[in-house]
Length: 441
Length: 180
Image (cartoon, rainbow over all chains, first blue to last red):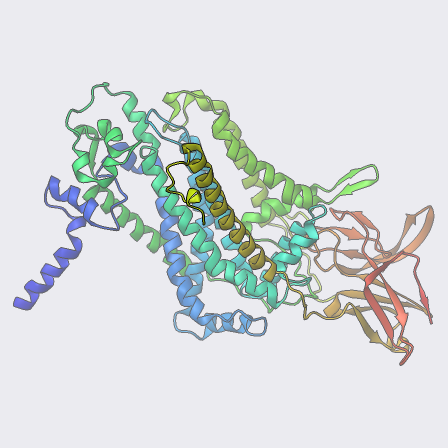
């Protein structure tokens, strides 16, 4: 019995912050726990609601954690050398206990992460959450730009991981990808040489992509993620909270409770103090511990469960070992780049004597333009305070339609590239069968 | 050191003190930037290889008489070598769009094409599996996104053993033929 008491005590010590017994304990829970200290003490009910944010950012980060954990195990099993990469992946798939599951979970979470990060961006755009509210020192456009860099890093992470199995799929996706870089005028060939560490896709290229994939990019994402989170606090929480504060009476709450709870309260500029005028109103807000924490656990559980289920049902493919002389027919990029592949196919321009490679237009100019547009957008968006943190604000109707339009075009091209392109990149309806193609020349 | 040059000298004006402080600050910041730049440069430079362990661009593909009439595909170099009677030529198998390997595709019936005003009969084409570019038998691009014709490479005969030598470093015109 003594022993059980002891266990219970330790359990309570570890979990009391998730399950505080009083208002004071709930405040302490946030301040005293390193994992929770970056959350606000109180959170508005709207920020917390499922159908405002859909917790897409949270899901992205949980997927990142799943990827880190499975990735670390895979690092023990994978050998980044041209001679052994393929066979080590084959071993992971067929010999290592639960290797297939690790690899499958890793792959599915990577795909999901690309999709969820994209959806997160869509959510932020459609709710006008890149806009500043009334709170002082708020600089949401910066965080939007950090988000764009995070999206690009996610794509790069996924793309660099694509080469590692050293199978046909990997080899040809990287061939196409790095040749897009070389289509840039003047410096293109040099960039490709630098990316590959040579003229051909070989050992140098493999180790480069490996180091980018397992160290450089994950660390970058982690740092950007910390900054992304810190900025949310600095910018006054989710944009939904700004929207709520609009409808509130301007009177401030006299005692600034938050100052006693949080170190953040005595920093200059946007302190918790400034933002808590609204958040502290009892009927609109709840304590982060346990309400936010509980939801985070729920989302974590659900994400993990869905990922594992998907991983079991959709096994990770492994094609034949990389063969530089035989291009699979059709050869496709990863699905999230297929809209680009579709575009590079259609955009070779002939202007008199000059022919511009479609790879340059579709692979470099267009993506650069889209990224530039996204970065510039928050600065040209002049809609009012009522459009901050609400879905489909009438004032931003045109903007939202434009954005949705671009997304739909990208999605349509992705679908065409994924399902409707067969051998030689010819168009086939899903019910049409592909002609038999000789594998060798 | 003269007494007047000491920093604690009461004769020093406020301005002089400040300019020295500013100078030292600039020297400090400058050294930091310089060392960061130098470290950055050497780090990036180390990643640009000086020696490549890649296969040579010039290589032998066998004795002319050993090649069969028509086309031979040199797999590991992605190269089509053609033999027409006594003349030989080589066309690259790398698509000029994004570098996939084009496939030699036999036509069901010969096709007339016009190149530079001349009509030629061809019985095969090159098709790219990645983005659907198509090339005539002589490498001229006619469909899909490929921006230019397939590359032709120089063929020579080795003086020592008579084998054919391909030089991937040297592009040649489409009328190139090596006659042996």
